[in-house]
Image 1 (tube, helix red, strand yellow):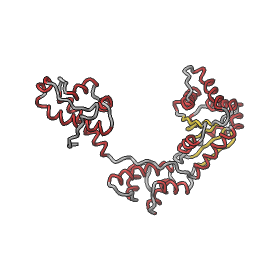
Image 2: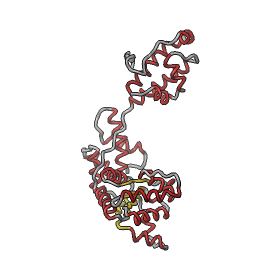
Image 3: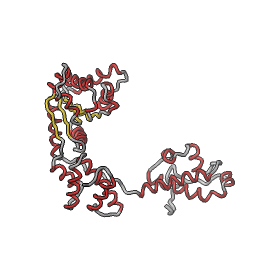
Image 4: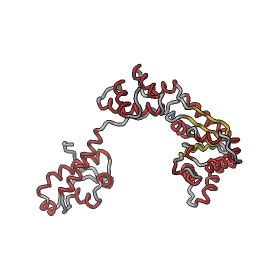
Length: 339
């Protein structure tokens, strides 16, 4: 950053000479200002940031930044210099940090294949299916992959805040690109969208254990009326409601409508091996340690988080991940004792 960069040819980041009033008022701070201004311009050009973007990122007022950069600001220049210098230093520090390693692309594990087959069944037969597999098995990643590779598939995620009928409908409307502000008309608007799509559509409802019973009944209504497949994806709770001997007509109708239930609470050993291989781990000791981590609660998710932390350390030293890196990463995560 100390090397001079000619920015005069780059529109928007020319560095004009300050006006005479600016020079007379800020004699003691001019040299710092010139140095900091040049660094700001270099950073902006390197990152393709506009002045508006730099203003937002540095949290300096728009009018103040414009005057500061152009050399017309007549307030306390040392304060503005200090703010921009701190911002420049923060950007440089962030750039020097090791990149967070990316998780492997979609891995076609055994459980991913079983989830895919269940989703295909629901879509082809316009049936209601339940997928209840353990945390960290890759069910959400598989659902996203299925959506990305199959037409007329819509994937909505329910949270505790959108567990009601209306909350779920809002999430579905967003996924289906339905624009209806009247809550009373939302069900019909979603139905009309499904009707226009015709047969062969699939609604994947992720984290479905959060749904209230009436919301699940609403999904059954969509399936019955518009012949779309429904996949309720979540933990065991979403199925246990219907496995119990619950009374009431609505429960009986729902139990009757479940065409397929995929259940898996422990990861397949072959899936853990495949995921470790996807991270590029070939060392026997490292693979053995990661296998033990993958057998704990969270399965592939535990491997993923541990490998990201271990890889950050190794990348910073420009070397491959070692078993010691993995041990340290697991210990530093402090989620469970190695033993």
